[in-house]
Image 1 (spheres, helix red, strand yellow):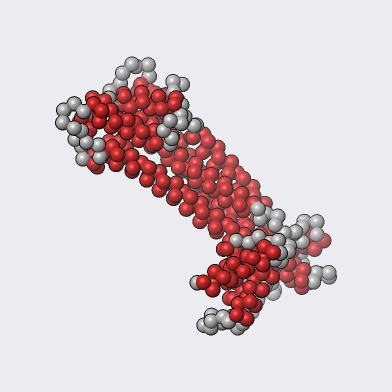
Image 2 (cartoon, one colour; image 1 turned 120 degrees about the vertical axis):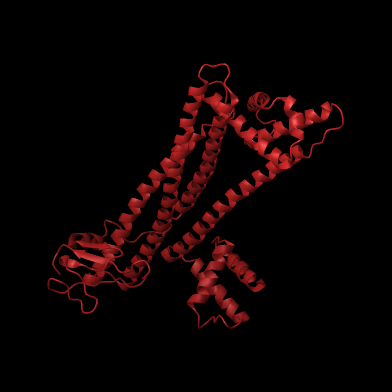
Length: 425
């Protein structure tokens, strides 16, 4: 382990001297790649000597310091995006753990309160203050930071749980107290949300239901546009590479073709991350839409129950307040997830133009491929002229020879293309 740490740190140092900043993760990734690609030089069953270590460091640094290198940018993108997704999950988990820790501490303070014999006014006042502080924290606020919101919470608390109920509350078990505090927090939150809706309160309560809806819909639209654009770019590379294999046009050197394959691999990797994000966001859109619709329906039902009445039986409205609060808190959680995915997309955007593309729509070979009418559909075998390719001898049903073309190099990305041609071969 110490030897690995030393290799990583030396790679980072040499790259920094060459004005190239790399992370520990990227350094380790590249060192591992060099070892795996040079198994005879660095056998896994043999301990590396000092000469081997220096050679490994040198080779890794050379790879990491390449300029305008699509393969290097593909590796960097993979490391950065995998790290971003991991950090996304860890950050949300840490936030949840911190919230639970604070709330559990406040619940413990409430549960551990004991009254002295007689009328212990001081202890009862302290207990009520602790309950109030718990409700403030459950509302996502720091005690003392938002006085208007705290006044609303205090008023709602007095309505839901008058001080006269403290002596009965103190007799409950710890689990019963926890359950009642949780129920109390949701009812208080629901009251504040209802008051916000009717224009009589809601201090400190952002319009989360609209924020998260607009954010997730904007993100969905952005991903749809970018995914469509990248699909077109990938198809352009595919068609041009297949055309080059079929026609071997003058002026296209093996080096140029290899560069195009590397660029295609990069764009396919970029597209795979876009597609993964898009799948996640589609799930979020569905969840946000359903929760938001439920939230607004519950508010409408509550307004119908309360209307202009001065008093309503609590058994009718308290469950509605709880439902409203539950939906709103779910939307708060979804907003955090959407914001984390926006941050991941921004990280991906840093690799959108990380090298100079050598194949563009105005390139002569690309335009020739378009005129030829070569089309590639990934995941299918070649079926030119409406026939079916026979793997055994290339003969197709309906007569004639089929074109069974697979682009070699980056095989995992160019696997089994299906080729269609409008023109004659």
